[in-house]
Length: 199
Image (tube, rainbow, N blue to C red; front, side):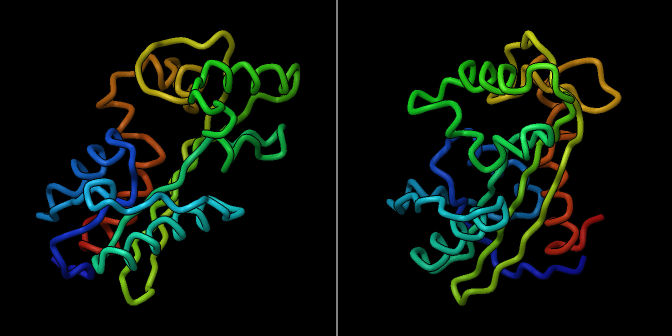
């Protein structure tokens, strides 16, 4: 197996326990030990980028420089073309300080009105090395938005998003099935192909 990634320790540049756990599970088959940024006391950098790629690279680069280890970060969100790409990189901020995504979903619904309800989930993974090298991997899942939301699985905008050719929202879908087709899984497949020689 061709393996571009030569180390076995990796910082997950996130303070979200669920995201850290999900990334750790994805990396487990490659014998990579993951360390949460929070457990190292690393601060969360301000996301000042103007794209998913820029914010993912910013977070991974900061963690790699601070820890002296390779670091993996992701930036993800819901993109609605009829809203000019919003909420996009501001997907979490639309939920407010309380992180209430019912508020965020209601805002998307209200702003859309009778506009086209096509949407896509986007995830960008960034792997950064302490020396400054960075690689980016993007995954997308196209679909559409429904109202009212359905399902209490998943998180964020999942209950209002149905992947293309599907009938269930991400909020109704079995988590194993969702993770198999998710935007993050698609980005990770590209990362695994590039770094570990897995197709």
